[in-house]
Length: 256
Image (cartoon, rainbow, N blue to C red; front, side):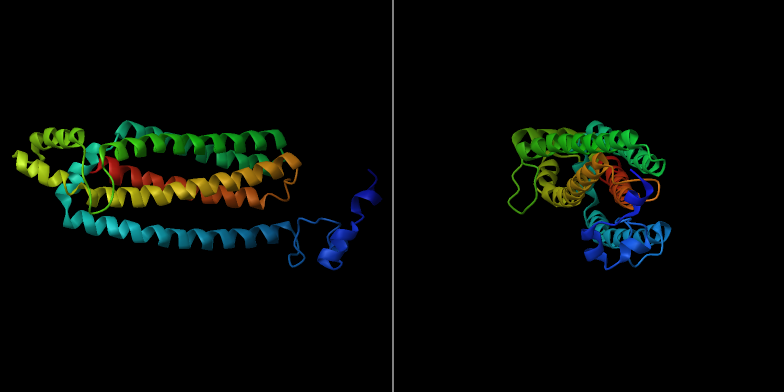
């Protein structure tokens, strides 16, 4: 392709940007209201940081609810965490931490214009996200099977009651009656558990769709060392998803 052909704007670009293609050499990834790619990237970063700030406020409400209910019912939270599988939670934590590494790698690959590495990093991030949801599905299915769910009509299974009785015998309670009483109030803990982990799971699903969108564009060859803002923005979002889980894991699985 000659220099003339490479800088000749298509008719669609001319109509869509009203002569903008001529200003920026036919670069249709650069908005007409930005003077260069650096200006566009910095503006996009400001936007994504504002979005992440409201996400923190969004989750902040649930963290406040957690703190209030835990202060009101410490014995229920002390017992409730015993029904969670710490091993699966730890595996999911490692999966998300690794996915943050691949997300950061995708940004670096885009900056260096390494298309194959970019595609590989995005694919690995998507696989980690599906792995996280798969493990979460196993946890959810087990809790629902035992009757450890939210709502006032909570009715734990006999297996769950036996588990609670054994747990109470190790220090949380001294009598069988107290063990059954706590078991019948576990819905308070699991209401918080499903609300916090469920909302986080929805954000993981949104991240998968965002990375599938990036994967399509990466395969098409849209991203270069000058234009990688979408990769950077989605990676920042994914780091937040990872960070929130790093707080959820100890608060729900470890602290007692």
